[in-house]
Amino acid sequence: MNTSGASAGLGLVSAATWGGSDFVGGVGARRAPALLVVASGHIVSFLVLLAYCLGVRLALPDTHSLLFALIAGFEGSLALAVFYRALAMGAMGLTAALTGLLTALIPVVFSLFQDGLPSLLTGLGLAAGLGAIWLITHTPAKDGPTTPPAALLLGALAGTGFGIQLVLFKIAGGGGPLWVMTSARAAGCVALILVILVSPPKGPWRGFWQTGILAGMLDTAGNLFYLRAAALGRLDVAAVVCSLYPAGTILLAALVLHERPTRRQVAGMALALGAVMLLSV
View 1: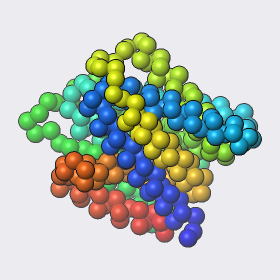
View 2: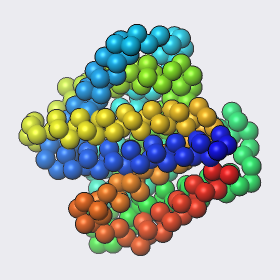
View 3: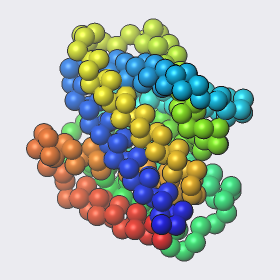
């Protein structure tokens, strides 16, 4: 398989594991505050990564890679806290769609400057992928609550933060994915603990460790697959394919919880398949 195909394939695996992480985390957030679920996953996955890196005496990467990994972990976790705040302010559909689109769009713009213009097929695949992300994540509100401008602003900030994190991971990835991920997790734990101390989550502080640990492990695996995908090919290809992860969450919800996807989401997933095929060429 060529590098584009390998990058798209690994990106698809990353999207699947990220989708599984969001599904497990979403189930856990029904019983306990979402930030506690995420923080527990970050802490345990950090400890596992650190123990492995020290246990096998993995060589430390250069300072440049560690610095970018730390920044990525810290700002990405802050973006996550902002995203949860945005979702809590009103109708989630438009906010989630805007966040998902910007998460993929920021790396696409960066890649245009770093890697130059993509080929025609890659460009069509990127456009199809961005369209698929919008269709999958955006659920139009009919008679439900409207989305306040503040929620959209916070959603845009979160999406920008997620997109920057993907760019920073790409820059740091050359230093070795395991230490990069360990450093990012360490900084992410600090950021989430600070958020929890400043604004303690409401709700019962129990019953979040099990789902938090599983969600954190899946998220860590997804990040490692993304790092590999971004290292093999263009950043925009890896980022757009990985950003299709909501499709995995929706499919798991349909299989496990029997929540039927909407026609719009099914159309988005079909478009996503076409995008992956174009990006694999």
